[in-house]
Image (cartoon, rainbow, N blue to C red; front, side, top):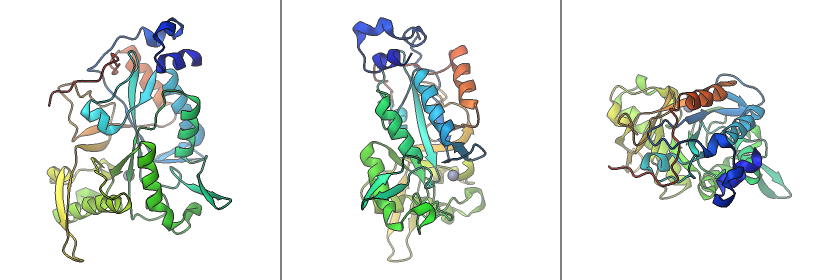
Amino acid sequence: MRMGNILVSIGLIGLAHHAPSQQSSRAPNLTGRVPILMYHIVGDHDGKYWRSREGFRHDLQLLYDRGYRPIGLAEFVDGTFELPRGIAPVVFTFDDASPSQFSYVERNGKLEIDSLSALGIWLAFGKSHPGWTNRGAFCMLPAAKAGHAFFGDHGIEGQKTEWRFPKLKQLVDLGFELCDHTLWHADLRKYPEAVVQEQIARGALAIDSAVPGYRVRSLALPYGAWPKNRALTQAGSWRNPKGGQIVSYKFDVVLEATGGPAPSPKSPSFDPHRLPRVEILGNYLATLLARLEREQTGFVSDGKPLKVAR
Ligand SMILES: [Zn+2]
């Protein structure tokens, strides 16, 4: 099984007859749905907003074995991702910027990615599973309480404040995307338009402080909640009272928190400013993948880049 997947993922066509029939025979479906998975804390148990480390590893393996490979959020909406024929895309998103997703440990004066954090688990998995590339988006809070400030500060879970910006840079260098999740997870339903824009603009501004010039293309709605004026999630601006600087934002992608697998960019129901996501609890991922396969409603690549007319 594993060997078959390796052969498929590195595209050794001459040996493709060794690939598991399940994937090599899977017919392309360019209008099928793509699961955008939403993770929060990756820790020692499963629960609302929690995925156990063991469960997370299991999710990666299950997806790999079922012929899924990660693609980026921007690649997904742009239709620029490329996967071998018969392979299916999956988009990972990690919300709320907790140390459980990305923490450092100091060893002999050097910083290492904690192998127990979600990123550490991901990177180890990628090393032993060819074709599992560093793609996915971290939807972050720069200034929320209890360690939810760019993956931990002030010694919370051993994380130092000065490690925050280097972590964001490292995520970009590794191939991941940075996504805005507001300043401190404001429920945008409850605030006037000026505060909605301040929350979103300051989230983007903080990312720019860490990685100057980085183009933030996506916003994840806290609690999946829309402000009264939905247009403000796509574009807006805020004037910084300190110095009068105007901070503007414009997003290509707005992520909800529920709704099931997302429509393909080729589907008439595709709306990048309102993309549904899937929260993974317990064995739900296995159930979802089985359903997509049984009903043949999942996206399956034909081996060529998707051409999206826009
Ligand atoms: Zn959140």
